[in-house]
Structure formats: structure tokens, C-alpha cells
Image (cartoon, rainbow, N blue to C red; front, side, top):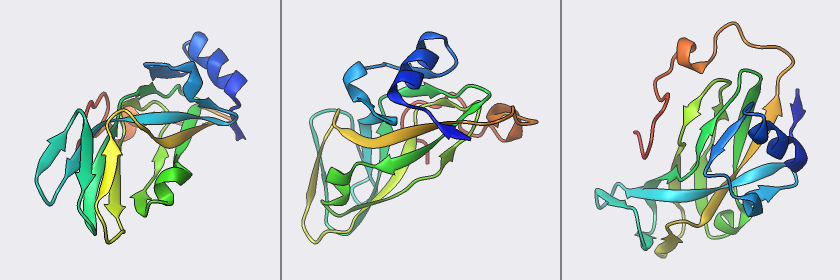
Length: 157
């Protein structure tokens, strides 16, 4: 397994081996791509915020949906990492692996561990996706294995 560089990511997107829609070149990092916020759901207020500023109460759970719709090819998997600017603000997030063959936006489970409200601008870069190339195609891709969130858009809990 190897991690894709910015050059690899651009080439794979151009060759339709990997999809990132919309693709914004300035979001490329040396070894990944910064995903931005499309929607925030605040459980405490049962509120979905899709524009402007989301204000997360202290010690509260919230979810973020990415603006980008990713299409993982049959040999591509990825990991998500919170951007350090949000980690430094006290955001804790649960990240998992994005399976080969997954297509959709990503829903991220988060917690404001701070004792003060947290402002999150819609559209801000929130996490980095790091793509990995596998050595062989799995026996079943995401859509056949479980496919629970295949082609999702927005926050899916």
C-alpha cells in the first residue's frame, strides 16, 4: 500500500481513477486533499446549518458533512485526519477508513470539548483525506460489501 502524492491525486482525478467533486487545486496538500464543510448538524439544538456560521455549544456533539463528493476507485482507499487548526480549538472527531469503491459525501462525528462556544464557518476546510493505493482489488467493493451510505449527500446519521 502506498500514499498518493499531490501529483498522483491530480493524475488519478484526470484519469477518472479517483473522483473529487468539486476539485479545487488549492485544497491539494503534499500528501492529501483538504475537504470543506457543506453542512453542520448540532444535536443539542436539532439544527442543520448550511450557510453562514455554525456556533457549536460547549461540550456538545455535532456532525459535519463534506462539500466534496468523493469517488474511490477499486484500488483506492483513504483515511481522514482533522486539520490541526480545529484540533487546537478543542474539536475531537471520529474518523474511519473510506472503503474502496465508496462514492458520496462524508459525514464526520465531532465533539466540541471546549468550555466555550465554537464558531465553524460553512465552507471552511475541516479535514484532510489521505488516499492510499492498494496492491490488489478487493473481492467486493463497498457497494457490494455493505453499501449503506453509497451515493449519500449531506449528513447521514
